[in-house]
Length: 341
View 1 (tube, helix red, strand yellow):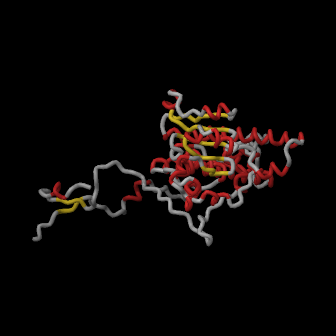
View 2 (cartoon, rainbow, N blue to C red):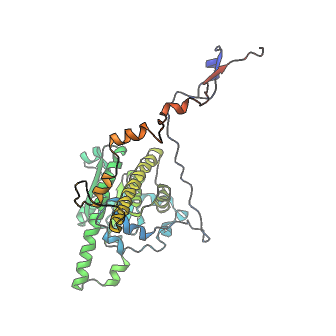
View 3 (cartoon, helix red, strand yellow):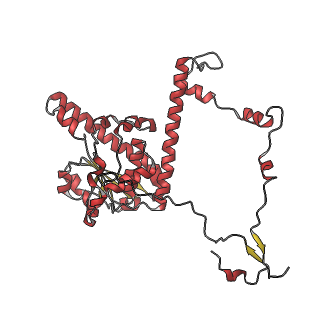
């Protein structure tokens, strides 16, 4: 805010307060979750929504059909959070853990939790210096993967790659579990009571890059919106840090996912209309075409768009500038009055 002394000798004063700082987007405030009658956060994960995860363009999701959620989110309620737990990993989903690098180097934890893959979300400089590795996981024969980014802004492009890593591993574990059932070495009861594999996602502290990735995974696979996703991640690991840039990044990714769902739904609706005969799926030459091609042909060409703008009901369409002619002006400054006319 500019100090009043700056205008002490000026005949004009600003009509509104203003400053020299760069404009910033509005803050994303995450409210605490509602508390139910038992005094626990009213949060839950809808497992049915994960069955349509392919709508977002992610494959190999058949393992999600075997995951049991029940009242899982309140298992590590932040109401019982202890400060020392920031050094350990927490289970955010039945098959997904979030924690610091120290958890990935803890052989006892990896064996006890039956971790089958560790995924490091790290800076490329840390990767070049061979930091944030997990020798303990390698010694135990656990798959080790890494998602390297030059900065947090690259995370939004790296999310799909990391999600595919997790899904590919869990899908492979699911196929292995299915083969054991066919061989008679594993019972159906074991299949229904445990996830086919478990993945630990970690970074230096387990509170920043890795937390953003876990939030992005939940939004992508469960069609969950940003605020509820952050509430769920924070309910399981209370020490996570979602600063304003991280929230804006996740909000952008949420919009991308929503756009994918809308396109998928539009393609599905068009296919239904074509099947019902309400929309023709024949091209200009009379040949049959796919529903996706019909959708593309439904878009206006540039010439058609110009023609629509030129004339509407016999009258020329108003230009954008016409809307400002009747708008009342607003003066950024007003005269300083000295008390006499």
